[in-house]
Every structure is written in structure tokens, then in C-alpha cells.
Amino acid sequence: MKLPKIYKGNVKESNNLRVAHAKENIDIKQLIDNLFKQNKLYKQNVEIITNNNNYKTKIIGKTNEHIITIDNQIIKINEITNIKTR
Image (cartoon, rainbow, N blue to C red; front, top):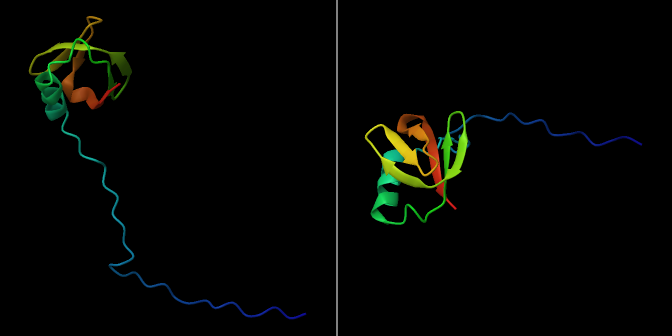
């Protein structure tokens, strides 16, 4: 039994075929400001994701460069990649 020939067309790159994947740009300082505006910090459990660690804690304060947690941990804002409320 002879198998049918397979069509081998050329795929050309066009603008319709390109897909751009961009990393979601998260403004961490804006997230922190929104948490402080809600006035729920001491009650609000958050997960702070940094370059090196994940912290499951509560935020009790901030400076221009750091976040202070209820566990007395000081986390640099420029190392934070995301903050999630739990």
C-alpha cells in the first residue's frame, strides 16, 4: 500500500504570526500605597515575594526603602517582586 504524499509548504513570517510576551510590570510602591490606604494592614495577611524569599506575614510599617513586618523583618522594597493579599 502506497502512502499519500504530505504537503510541505513554506511558512513565512508575517506580523500576524508574531507573538510578544512581556513580563507583567508591577509597580510595587503603588501596591504598598494601596495597602496603606485600605487601613487593614495589621489585619491583612500578605505574601511578600522577593528575589530570594517568600514571606507570609503582615505589614506594619514602611519607609522610603523598606517594609517592616509584624515579625520584625525589614525587607528592601527594591528586592520585592510582588505582594499578594491572602
